[in-house]
Image (cartoon, rainbow, N blue to C red; front, side, top):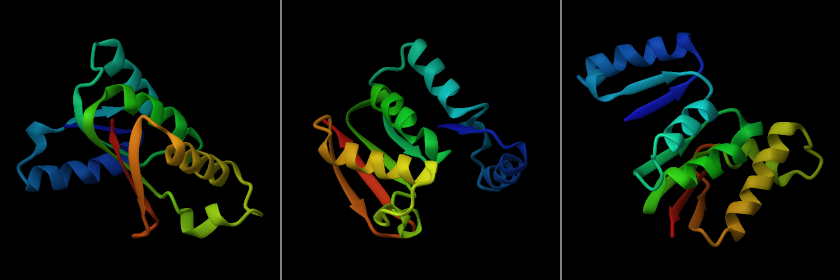
Length: 133
């Protein structure tokens, strides 16, 4: 499993839980911007090699994560995208901050994207599940 994060503080907490679960040897933490990690994986021939990807990162760059993850995801693989309802702000046309607009735009893109079959689940702050065709 490859985990991408930029926070040493949060990942140090996560590492403790990984160790308690006996999983620390199975998790490859990449402590750098996620786009850099994804680009490295693509450059090293990772295309169509992942069974599952999960996006929960800086919202303004969700589209970049989505496109890179589609390259890495194998046909039939599953993508999860977190926070797609964004506390309901995506449905508020008056909410025009960068994060909300980015999520709203990605939601529409995924809805019409013929490369995936997707559904949005209203659990928590919203979760999109998409299977790569």
